[in-house]
Image (cartoon, rainbow, N blue to C red; front, side, top):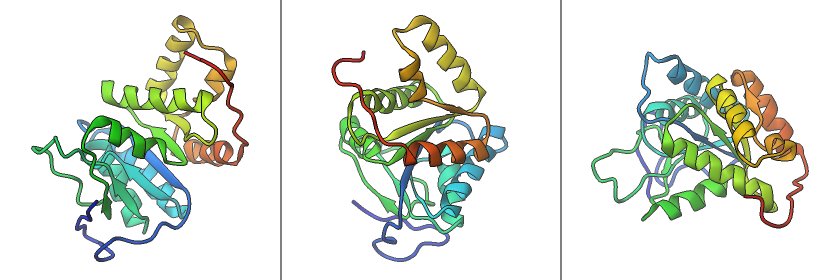
Length: 202
């Protein structure tokens, strides 16, 4: 574990967690001025403004935008960089870095969040969102998932058409059209009592 320096770093060790921990996953490739980057910035600001701590993959793109928005709102920002990705520098907006030795370690941190918001992304983002969704089907107290944006709505519709997925499964992956709706959905899923279905759900 380590800390990073940012324009508003609270000092060695970072700040103590204040409340809910919401992870934000999304593409590291999309940068300003892409509209998705500005949406990620607004999401981070909204989460930080609610007093929630924010976790990201720890790098740039949409993850960096969410980290910046959250940090500027005074939030604790936890990054999950990979030691094997030596060529990549973690986002300076993180207040705490939880280094992972492998992808399994990174996923363990992600799954320990209270909720996960998935922004637009590639195969890595899809894989992480699917893992969170799968855990929510069967694991008591698992992180709750919110998908943000029309790309996820189209993917969710394709999943419903071509995978073995029922209405109860789809309710575990609600889609928000914008940041305001994403925060509303987070309030709802975090307040709801978990009701995992026992047995295999794949």
